[in-house]
Image 1: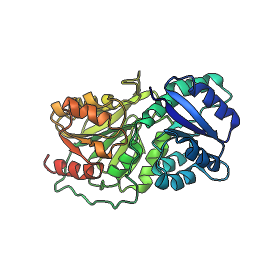
Image 2: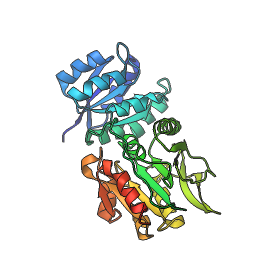
Image 3: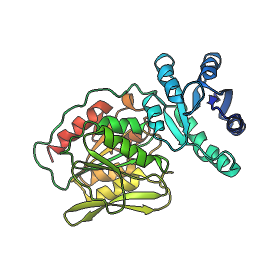
Image 4: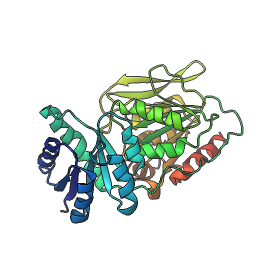
Length: 341
């Protein structure tokens, strides 16, 4: 069995050693080298040809983000960023990183062990299978318009690995006339609010982290908060709002795309569009099928533009996807089906 060859890059000797000790306990992983800064990392990449690199954002001599920006065009590599709570992680994802995890407290050995066992190991294994995305920011915004006013329509989107960039690629093409949008993107708590603020600053629609009671309104995107709660759509007088309620993980995730899509199927029926984007596993596939069976239009990202063709593939194989599109064509397809509803 081929072991996943990992390069660990972090300026803390203690953190590097803890990662090496714990990662090497997994029979599927082999740490082939460590580095304390980007210059050592560059030499280690050339010498050891790792499959995956774990990378701290804050590094001496050169930031992890700048290192990624210089590295990826010449030497594309699957990278998992380990970051404290900071929106810099989204710069790293934009620069080409596949995934990220929230950095634990090093002095708390139990938290550290849980972090490696429950978070980092899974992210490294997912990253090792990922397609390094060629979708970069800077592509022009595509203008789409609704021909008629659409009342009480809902757009629901689900994504995981590679989803932060994929969601931006879709949402940047949304105009203020778009029906209310609800999104689940698998992400650690704290980061979803920063991600929503970032999108709000970069897109033509309003984007915010959802709270219970938020109305689903035209021109607005609601992103489910990371943590221990699921987001559901509920019907209220004159439209819809969201409910954020604690619950157990579904398909290994909280919030879960399936939970959101199931609620959209029940509450909105044929007055909805469901979109499933890049991600590992099958979360959202059954929910998207429920939406399609309830009369909703459904769109799945195609394999060629997915970082990980997992969730969209499972949905497609189930018959949940009516239209399969390249990432760049999803917003256009969504407007096309909305104009027929």
